[in-house]
Length: 200
Image 1: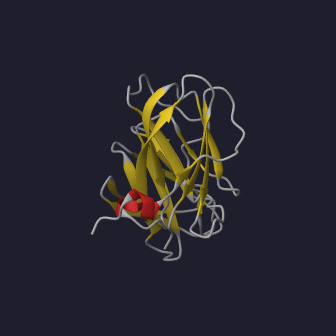
Image 2: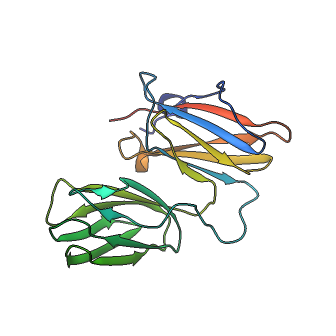
């Protein structure tokens, strides 16, 4: 049975500071505790134009037998590099529908790369180290960011009008580990949302 949106989240107005053209978001769990590293995206009903760029590098480093960052947001078409800073070799792979690939054994100070051409969530593993787990969220909108340790993020320059906001987290209950609902960005003033999600 498909869960209704009210059971999966609560999109509530919150007293979060925002600047002109911003949508400020705070993501919390069922107990009201902040959720870090949730990916928040907004798709304006009017669509988006031009190439998509983010201020962070399209790099997923293997360091201390872990993927760094644990979750990376990249635009569709981005080529991600996977430099190895560990003293041991890694074998990066994904069986996710948006990107199935293998980057076979490579050692310290070596790097491999892969181009992500389909939007969606890509789960990463290492064929040598079973404890390694990471995620790449491939997006087709410039309005995307991760929540910080306080569960907050800010998406700037969205513009007035109807839009769809989506929250994704690897431990979220629900189809594809995400949930979406409509929002209306006002012509004057900014929008702040408190979004409650249910985690596994």
